[in-house]
Image (cartoon, rainbow, N blue to C red):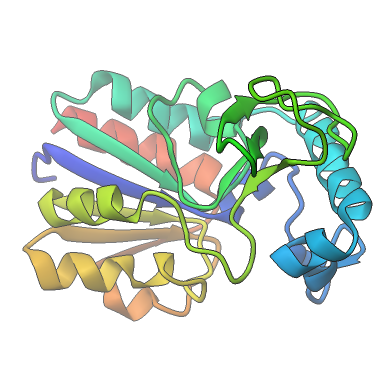
Length: 235
């Protein structure tokens, strides 16, 4: 395999599903028995903040019960041992990459373990429950905290940084993504337009955009990524 020095990896729900994290696509558009429009939009939060806070409180509690799998650990190993740069961009809001040893993870859709203040814009690491009566640790106001999650209708985070990383990479790997959630679904096309990077998709089954990848490795990320990472490090 060619020696790559600047790798960008996009991860989606599939990599976390192998750790037992549920996604809303598992149940006909329902996420933990809730309609997306009731728990993952700005309008839902304005309409019923108690419901939305409780939903994400439960998701944080569930997160403590799952562990990183071999796929998360393999990517962390690649970051630590490759004589170059490895950027991990994830669509997932869990912290399994970090707990698996990953560093500087770019969370395009935000993080479950963070709360953002609508009044002072401060972002706080958060492991427990949050309610409308919880005060912001910085400005001490009530009813101003919300999950630091990108809801439907909101702009994804860190897009300028992501575009820069895509423009300079020589290998782009997509892991466990459906290929139909934008802007992430368009990253492979961005890479192709910007340069000569090699592209690999790792997925249980071909994504909607699999034809755009030069190489497809089909199967469980937890089985395939350790092998791929060893190949990259051996080169």
